[in-house]
Structure formats: structure tokens, C-alpha cells
Image (cartoon, rainbow, N blue to C red; front, top):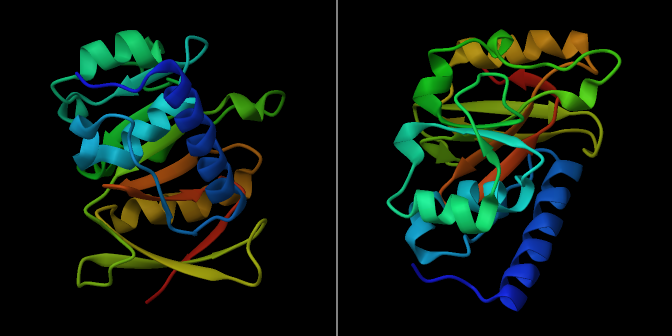
Length: 198
């Protein structure tokens, strides 16, 4: 497996972290991330996020369908996060069809004493910011957004979005969302207020 040398990897992680932080500071803004390994091209943003945010102090539940051929070697030498099948993992990387079969209430929403210990969901969707008959257009407002912004997401069900809209009343409890599609992603933190466009 081709990989970056230590110097290039350090630069890659710093640049990726800045990009993720920018996305989280500006919910709904479409950002781009390239993986450090060309074998991850189909899931470039998702794998770059995992590589950047997950370390040996965090737990990761990566769904079986998203494990590429180089997954084991990549996890061993570049990520080192604790691998788990727990629904309460710090980070869960799921395809949208699996998320649709669950409820957001299944995940760890943190506690009032430690809301930051909630789960972050990294969800690979079918399309991002491309309006088609299957896309759901969301209107976002709240911290980091001037007035409001819109984003179209294809793959996550109405029921999940309705759950997310209702759960905003429980803030600061909740889950943070990183929505990925190939090399693109958007952040929807728990602080963001959502409305579905009709």
C-alpha cells in the first residue's frame, strides 16, 4: 500500500484538520478532503476524516461495507483507534442506508455534565448538494451561519431528519454529523437548527 512519508503525513493531517474545523465552524458549507491513500478515492472524505480525528484515545465503529481492501493495514499503521462494534463509539462511520434503519436515539448523546462525550456520526450518502428527485433540501441556521444556508442531501431518510430537528430541543445533548460523499463533506453540529424544505 502506498503511503505518505512521516513529514508529508503530518502536513496532510494538519491541512485536513484545518478543513474539518472550517466545515464545523460553518455548518452546511461543502468542503473537500482527499485521502492520503489513492486506494481510498471512493471514500476519500470519510477516510480522511477518520484518519484525522480518530486516534488511540478514541473508539471507532466503521461499518463492514465501508472497509476497503487496505483497511486493516491502514488502521494498524495510520489510525490506531480502538475498533469496536458498539453503537456508543466515539465515532461511527456508516452508509446512509444503515443509518436509515436505526434511530438517532440509539447513539450516545452525551450527558449534561459531559455533552462533549457524545458520538460523531460520519455518514456516506448517495449525493451531496446535487438537487434531484431523491434529495432532501435542508435549511440551516444557528452558530457559524449568517442568516441561513441550504444544502441538498440524497440518501438520508425524512424520518432521520425529522428526528434530528426534534432533538435540537435537547441541546447541548445530541450527536454531531459529518455528511460525506466521495471527496466532499459538510458538517452539521448538534447546535445547528434544521428545517426541511418542502
